[in-house]
Length: 96
Image (cartoon, rainbow, N blue to C red):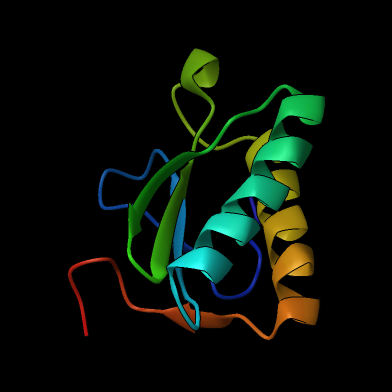
């Protein structure tokens, strides 16, 4: 399965992941809220970690024990939501 540009396959191969960096906590939280509203409508909820101005998403379909089209579709939505905000892709939460 092809994954969207900028997303990586997790070490265990069961998810796709991407981190984003924002200007500050408020921008990160606002972006997460936009993602959450879409995820709720799609009934497909991402795993995420938040640390001040960074968000890390891990997308997987637990019922399938791996990545499905639902995950790649949500990744594409997350990327589309990030574009107008000028959000930057970033290293993982613990990375510089």
